[in-house]
Length: 245
Ligand SMILES: Nc1ncnc2c1ncn2[C@@H]1O[C@H](COP(=O)(O)OP(=O)(O)O)[C@@H](O)[C@H]1O
Ligand SMILES: [Mg+2]
Picture 1 (spheres, protein in one colour):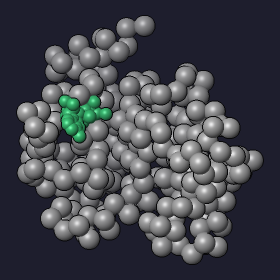
Picture 2 (spheres, protein in one colour):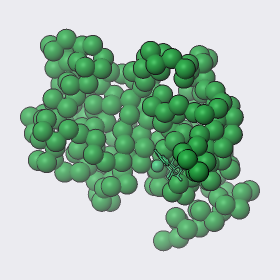
Picture 3 (tube, helix red, strand yellow):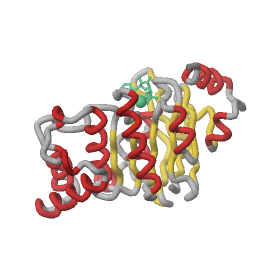
Picture 4 (cartoon, helix red, strand yellow):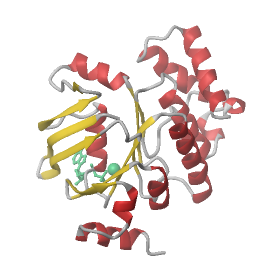
């Protein structure tokens, strides 16, 4: 992914969520993983890159094009190019798996009802979820729900897929099935920005890792660099805490 962010800052009242964050990724990076302590700014950065949030200052370029945060229309267009998945509560509880996918295809992406159903079925098939298409979220396990939510997030073939702690509400077995699916997406060429506390997975899937602490990218580099125990004291402390057992 060609992504460049420069001097990104974002404040919520007294809290400085991001402070002069810079990031430069070349086409060699297919998966960017954001790690770091809770409150460090991962979600804020991910949401700004995806166009869900506007920074107070700074700029973002994706694929060589500057994101125009000043224009609602431009921002909406940018957002439509992307796919999103959050920690939990991704699906509408009163809609079936299939309807959860067709709804945004029609309302956000302008598909006709027929196109939406065909595309949604294709996306469920692609991830082996076709048997669940008529079930409500409550009839699915947490892992199946997140996989349906991923099938929805990629149904319109987004340029970039943003996953914000997609497994943190799941038990270990379900975490595994969701992580497998994410690895599969990478293998198929999907570019992904992911925040996670699963360090083993981060190490395996990331081409580049950014460690965010107190609103700053305190360290970044390929997994080998991040996990070699080099450099930043906050990173060393964070890793020793999350990888202790
Ligand atoms: N919508 C919001 N309103 C107020 N404070 C927020 C909001 N979003 C994030 N913050 C604050 O900004 C900081 C960074 O949050 P966040 O980006 O969610 O970090 P992370 O995802 O790494 O846990 C935290 O202190 C958080 O409480
Ligand atoms: Mg977060």
